[in-house]
Image (cartoon, rainbow, N blue to C red):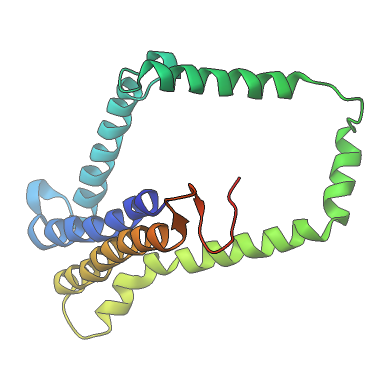
Length: 184
């Protein structure tokens, strides 16, 4: 998960570095403002990567060349078991209106909604970080360049923290989590 989340951190770092270069060097080029170049370049790159991923991302485990035959078998077996469980009708199904009523009367729904809003609010910090660095008194380009180091530091910290957590809370002799915690 830390490697997955590091992608977001790296996009925050490199997105601002790219923006600093574009805003600092392309203003007025070919009669366009720097912010227009920013949208064109970053949007084009995103579309390009999206199109490439369409051809690289495998459809099913058995079509992915990087998996061993055993891994393909396990993945296909898990998918078959999941599909079989989803098809079982145990007779306890409720209609949509009853399900909606159950969701609105369950306190866990509100706790989950509150937690989700808190996570989104904390993640929005990344949108305002360049504005905060601009209050240091530097110009726009330097302010954008100052945004990258904390993000890059957090990538290394996140991966190191993940590595250390795995080593401290995993018992290699038993194959289970250490300190009496059992993982299923």
